[in-house]
Image (cartoon, rainbow, N blue to C red):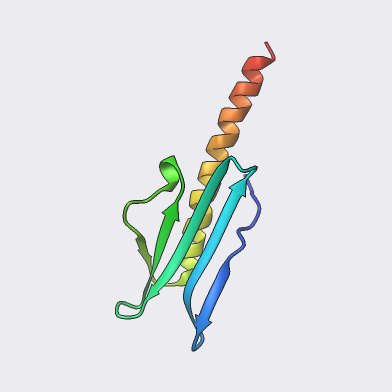
Length: 97
């Protein structure tokens, strides 16, 4: 299942993405937020996920590039939206009988 592309706001310094931020608000009902920060000492990108349930991560995840971190954010987003769609489809189908 394909969902819309995430819109990222990047902060770039010396041709390195220092941080990146993305917020999704679904009808004022569900808010999902992703933040990616560059750690220069390790040369890693930390992905922070904020939201409810399976979206929220207690510890950030580390990636070698900002692209890998954004791909994982999209995967987290897609899984959550698919889960929501499945629940809504179940509720709608249940109401039809």
